[in-house]
Amino acid sequence: MENDILVDSNVFLNLLNRRRDPAIWLVEWAGNSNLATCGMVKLEVLRGIKPLKQLTNISAFMDVMINVPSDPRLWVEATDLAWRLDRKGIVIPGADVVIAACALRLDAALLTSDTHFAQIDGLRVITPPAGWFET
Image (cartoon, rainbow, N blue to C red):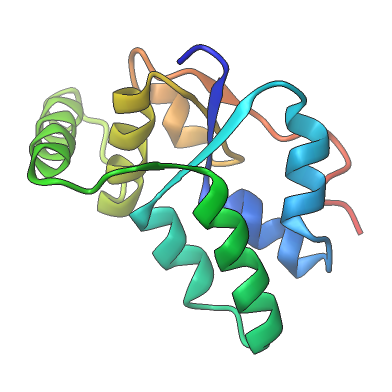
């Protein structure tokens, strides 16, 4: 949907590294937009969290976000996207291709600080606000 925003793992991780609660920052920033996630983002974010309480809180927040299902069709879509990008000489890490495919499937914008996502035709990219990742 037009108001859906898939949050890339780098946004979560950068906020966490600066001791900022992603749930608070993202909900306040999103306003009326719906926040989304996918299995790949969950894996990248949750695997690195050490404190159990923080893991539980971030996991619970992700559970109430829109979740893009990781069904067999998603893997076909991601593979096709990677193939098309590669033919254009655009090589993006596989995990990021899956995240992009999830955003495209949902017709959501992608909130990310990774610039290579801008090379994907049809993917709306939003850069996090200035100051989010400053200490």
